[in-house]
Amino acid sequence: MKPLGKRLEGPMAAKSQSNDPKTKSPGSISKAATHGQWGRAWEVDWFSLASVTFLLLFAPFIVYYFIMACDQYSCSLTAPLVDIATGQARLSDIWAKTPPVTMKAAQIYVAWVTFQVLLYVLLPDFCHKFLPGYVGGVQEGAMTPAGIVNKYEINGLQAWLITHLLWFLNSYLLACFSPTIIFDNWIPLLWCANILGYAVSTFAMIKGYFFPTDARDCKFTGNFLYNYMMGVEFNPRIGEWFDFKLFFNGRPGIVAWTLINLSFAAKQQELYGHVTNSMVLVNVLQAIYVLDFFWNETWYLKTIDICHDHFGWYLGWGDCVWLPYLYTLQGLYLVYHPVQLPTRYSLGVLLLGLLGYYIFRMANHQKDLFRRTDGRCLIWGRKPRVIECSFTSADEQKHHSKLLVSGFWGVARHFNYTGDLMGSLAYCLACGGGHLLPYFYIIYMAILLTHRCLRDEHRCANKYGRDWERYTAAVPYRLLPGIF
Image 1 (cartoon, one colour):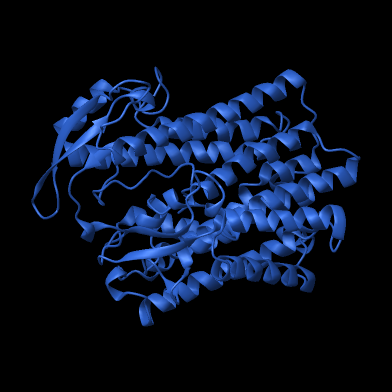
Image 2 (cartoon, helix red, strand yellow; image 1 turned 30 degrees about the vertical axis):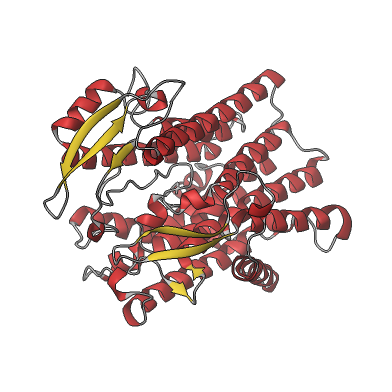
């Protein structure tokens, strides 16, 4: 999942889909494809079922706990537990102090989602006509297991620009609503986001069973919980253009990400009379990530989120709730604990974030260039070094691939993940060292990306066999050169 797993798998943590749909290998070029094995599992093992059950039960509680801790305990993660353990508070007391859903919050949320749907469906992209290097407009995705190639209207950058232009016009000229509106309704909006997340996940489940867009792209395991969480349909759509996966992966959660941070900054200004440099750092570094996502939205069509995941609760609820509420914890924390960083420290955090972004982006660029040109390119000014390898596909045909061992892919086998982790750490370091809460993100990302790294390598080892051993001998480290 992008949110539990997009980074639940995000556009910065996602790897381009290789031509072989069953596995993903760093910088590989495959010369044959077998489409029947794409998507999530057909059968559910005990570990997968346990993981699904745990997330369905506890992921909503985790989100609530973090937000409640900031609202009632000034962002302390231990104080609620201590109060309950010592009898100073009961769960019913904490719940009674939690703001309920309000009509105002419901109106805000409905207006927000409706506006993003209209921008997505009704306004064809025009940014690609005047922005050099930007690829937008109608684009094709990867082939689905059923052999379908869907078309998409790529207009996320346009939606982001229009949304933020209107936000700034309101903040400085129109004054139709306060720029602190998101923070002021943060918990009531959480309930609205949960309602949408569960509603769209349930609708997608029903649609997959009774009126799928293409029945050949559906998977059923016989286990209701797994089907509900991981999804039944590969590409659920309404009409020709409204694609559930692309819309909920990119809008409304990621468009909202930068607006949420701006609202937190506005609240800091309102409360303390100024915006701290730490809040500016969080806004700038996370805005770079968001803009990178939308600038490369066409590339995103070939990533694991679109090419592998089915659409269920994992993406539906995760994109509506997990992503906007837990990926913005740094800004929320800084409203309650404004931090003014020393100049040298703030410059160091900025450089760490920019360096992480550069490594992530350039590593992916090298990989994509290598694949597009079948290795006939220059990387760091030289002809790329490769490991020639072979594998046997599901149809018992033998195929040949090349594994890149030059550039960043010669430094570590998943060095794009390393860049992602550097950027994630920069977000957290911008908040200083006073509390654990803003560091949830780097802890979560480290676990997530390490797991993805090991999972990818297990698949590659099974796919390439001894050739993979040659590759790991040539590039001995996974993430951190000299360490891991």
